[in-house]
Image (cartoon, rainbow, N blue to C red; front, side):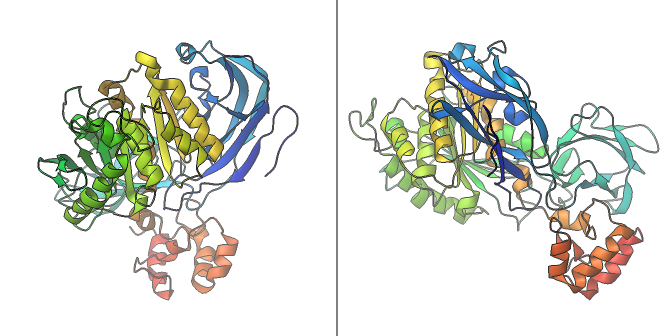
Length: 550
């Protein structure tokens, strides 16, 4: 690790590189500064990228003071990013967190960067079903001032008469958001009629206003919800209703399997419960259609009169309701979820049942049990979303601070308004505990404060997109379109042309030599006939690609 000198010590080291095709590759940047502060002050870092607040002091990133007067934090920033930043101190009063004027710069503006280059093609590619002949893709990398018009190439039949499949390759920039719209190259028309499409996906299919990371069926059904009113838990000795939402196209994709998100207080998650609704089903539908999150199955587990003791870990005492004055029984609730309910879900739905694809999320005491499940049952859950957690319970958060790091992705949030400011400072303290333990902001940990948000369903509904977007981003799903759209791009410049010939030959005859010459490229793209192997049988397909055949 390299370190600077003076008041700043900033280091870069490669970390958190996603292993799945198409994921955004990030590098961990270490920020630290020695600074003595007065009571009621904390040190932040503010920069011109989203991870550092996008130059808005209200969203600056607080550093962790565990080694006071050393303040520090690790942040996962996309590779190939140049940025500027500055340290600042801000008032600790929660009522001032949202105030951009709460900003007192420390020192000068500094420059930072992450390592250039990432694996795979450097541009994007897409298919589009349309009756226009030809459609024109109007695109820009997010933040650019102007659009580039790219006439799409005919890639074969569409779903029926009057429609073709169109293709564009080598547009935009890989691992950066693409903003675009379609127009009719031979007449009038615009898709979408107003606004833009926007996606991080590097290879995708646009069909009827929806983005897919695979070739979709001709028709795609909407998400479907089923409520189950009778499920007796032996562990809890009571009936526990639950409800399941399957994603779009579940019926039309019979071989496809899906990650699962288990949500607590299930009667409030999809439907209107006693305190409102999260509208999680509609939010997930919108984010899936727009290519923000991957397709997932959601399971809402209803609560009962035993809610408090079910959600409170045995470390702490139940303050109200059944079991009050006794240790919580979240350990028993965990047995129900893991050993009784999850096997039923896995048996009756096409799930990806391993820990890497299993998450849990909840709010208030449901947030506490979400972290408990991820922390104490890490063999089952790889990610969790404690929202507005009731961290006034003293013992379980203290135990988290005392125990070793877990391989766990954590979305953590609070509001800043209402009673006790929605535990904003207790949540911030837990964030600092996780940072000291080695969690990386925007890598393994996302922390959000909802300004003006109180402790209620409306606030959790408003923040749910940030939670689910962090837990199940679309770019982490396996993307078969990458192989199909970029096959033949052996020098990974985003285009398939004569410049790929030498790299293709090397990939065929000398795998080790290819990987040494093109360390960031993907040799599997030499499988141009898509038979799963790289060999001489790919030569004819490669020649056709170079010649411009679809």
